[in-house]
Length: 210
Ligand SMILES: [Fe+2]
Ligand SMILES: [Fe+2]
Image (cartoon, rainbow, N blue to C red):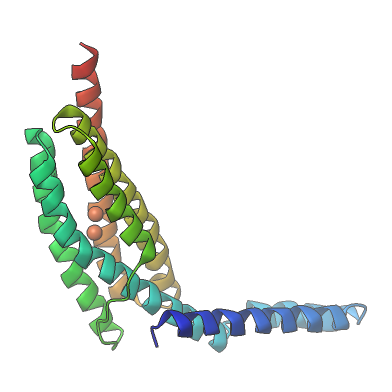
């Protein structure tokens, strides 16, 4: 469970299964209408293999975002140190606090799924954090660096919003309602952070335009 290799193997197996299913469907083409409608009925039933596959995918993705949130608890303080706008510093400080709660909430989600909380390196989040560090290194302190921090921060929030939206829907599909509500709570906070950063960016643009 959990390693990228295992994940790839599962995907390959699923693709093989899908191809096999397609082949079977092709070979069944031309059969009578009653068997066709029976297949449709069977297709609507919940498939235990698919359910297990979706659960595995949910856990893999939780392990990646768990790694990402933990890394963000180290990256956000660097963004705070580099920011100069009071409003931006306040927003980042507030989001650092909730990001620590996101880590705890993910641990609760693992526990609710009877899984050990394991962090799996997330290449996407690693890239987004590196981009933020690059922007901070390459810009002059002040409004331009603040604008860069907002832009990098919003990319992180958008990634988190996409991740938590998908994971929330996976959890609902699997009937894991308590996990879904934990993820929804975090999703709401990521949306709030993104909106706050948009507001700060707009007010900075207005100031610069004056
Ligand atoms: Fe988060
Ligand atoms: Fe966030």
